[in-house]
Image: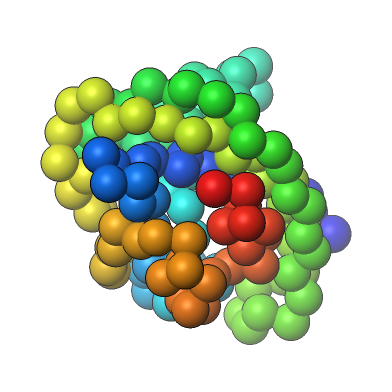
Length: 132
């Protein structure tokens, strides 16, 4: 089974809400909610990964503020994709430039912890809801 190292951003607004995205069509976990981010490339730090991914996916610049923790999860039977596992590292981040423009996701919400608990989140992302 393939295993990926992934980093996500918990981008907080001035009201304490966190930016959440809905995964787009044609991707594993399509329609699930997640914290934006992506795979770590060879020789790349987690901080550089999350800065690059937010620039690519949301046309915005962030500043990683604090490491929150990690979550490991194995996904099985997600047709047509092969089984895979991820280790997801979360960082609380601050938006420093841009408007968080969606390029790969179909929807977004600024959500409180309570609101996030009602969304259909990807399993690897769920543990971070309780750490916010």
